[in-house]
Length: 73
Image (cartoon, rainbow, N blue to C red):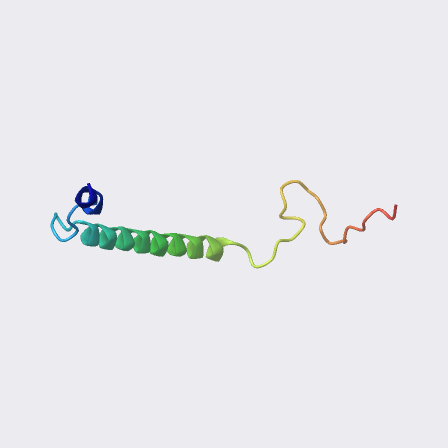
């Protein structure tokens, strides 16, 4: 009974396919490539933005040159 409780039921960790290392490397490389592409896309979009946002260029016509004061209640 005591030998049965002391058995290693988790399997032999030395044998097997050894696929975890290459799969982790592939996942890290895919995440790095996705990050690079996202940063490049964000930089392209930021370059296309105008230097300033004038109130005339706003589509809804709201004026932003006067500050909004809170209600003094």
